[in-house]
Length: 206
Image (cartoon, rainbow, N blue to C red; front, side, top):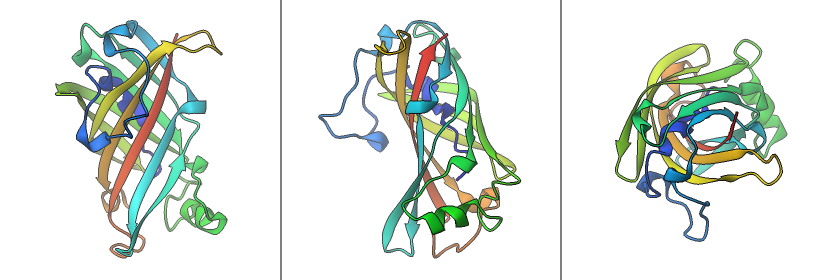
């Protein structure tokens, strides 16, 4: 939930465009290739970065919500992809669902307790190239608890943003966690313990 940080994006650029866990519709693709990414330091672009969480609702249907407005830094060199580093912070107070009542509940002490834990963070510790993408080991801090996680990421696109005129790069990422490991236990197992975080991350070169 809250601190699903998108930092994941980073290692993604290491590779090419295919990771089964992050399949997207064939018509949806980005520009360029990982080799087109300029080496350097990038800042997270909050307007076009999203973190979606999904859970199983009573074993009947999936249910999802989103976080936005993050900040962070990516350092990367396509010639040395495993040396990439990324750190991201996401405000848990940005949580949104299709129900105003549920959004309020998720902010409460029964769930994310955003008054006490207003941000979630991810910091990478290692990057491994994996076939059509990358695996990024890192530390996720959510609900005041820090645990190791694995982010599976892949490159999506690289181009100069025509609005900001800055070199930009985007990634897709996925993290699976047990929310109870982070102290978010409300309604387990009616609402699944397993929570999937999907990250659409955009970075701009500084």
